[in-house]
Amino acid sequence: MITNELRELLTVATTHAQRFHDGEDHTVAAALLTESGKHVLGLNAYHFLGGPCGEISALANHAASHPEDPIRAVVAVHGPTGQVLSPCGKCRQVLFDVDPSIRCIVRGSNGLEALTVEELLPFAYNWRDMDKEQRIYMWEGYEESIRSGEKQQTIRVDDPFHEGSAQIVFEKESGEVVTIPAEVTSVVSTQRRSLTEEQARRDGFGSLAELHEALDTHYPGLAEDDEVDVVEFTLRKV
Image (cartoon, rainbow, N blue to C red; front, top):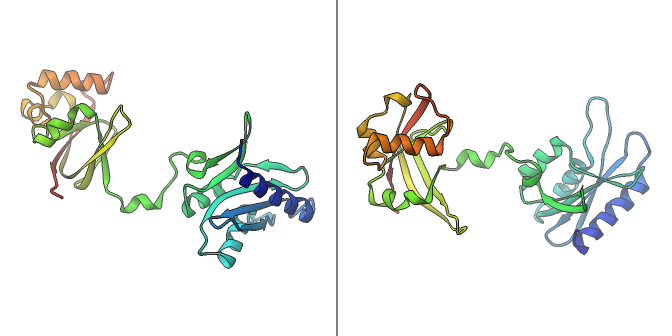
């Protein structure tokens, strides 16, 4: 189900699509809903070299008319049939770049629903991440040993890090998310068989055997000659 506000947006888009489509170059209309409740319309312009989609046209009109009014939702409608269309891949990325929380009206298995662009485009390229600190996700059971300084490193497989600032993140079963500011001081690649007792101690374990037991739990099937990264860190004072 969608809200009455989104039903109204859909009606506006459908009316625009059916009124202005020509069956050839202009067949898809899009409508945006802004934070203040305004509707901004757009129409696709087909060209064999690649013309703008209805959503892109609507975004351009929004930039020209209400740039200070954030976009909350979007819907695209096929003029000849009145069918709701999901945004294409290009439009999803463009909308994601504008705001990942924009809701897109799409047709699911149980009818119309409104999903965020982020939900429609998992693992999207996000330019906002370029300036974010790296995040080291840890099992919540390690929190105490990390805070006390007993655990000063982590062994990672296919989870690359680099020297520099970071946030250690605990996503707890309770739903609480706890972060601790940290600094990655060293990243060394080695084979699992080459791990040492000293590295096990820095990882908060009493012995190398305990470290290997934990690795088998976190990375089932990890072989002796597989490469691992030894990531050392210190906590930052805030």
